[in-house]
Length: 159
Image (tube, rainbow, N blue to C red; front, side, top):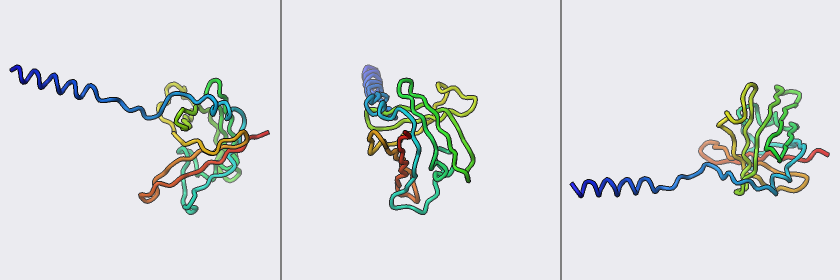
């Protein structure tokens, strides 16, 4: 009987001590985030090494419809706005919530009509790259035929 109790206690200890892994780091990189504050245009979408693929970005529209879209980032409350305005694509406008974490990840939630930001549980985690005062890139990784491929969103500041 003592062996069973000891075994149960030991197995409970082993399973309860397993560390929980976070999906993304929640600690904000204030420097990167403040540098993104302002108005931006998404000037291009590229797929290095795979130019002949079709991507539905953020489950909204074809990635090429995002070219020319306008984005406003407000860093003090992690909010903003995005608008697709390309003439041969369906128009789309939405508020967003976002932040840049200490791992260099850009975390984005798109808030659809009638939703409250705190109720939205799904979002997108992209890598932040090539950040300057005038431009930055967001890089998404997608699976194309079993091979991970980058989708590079190039942003340029609107003056």
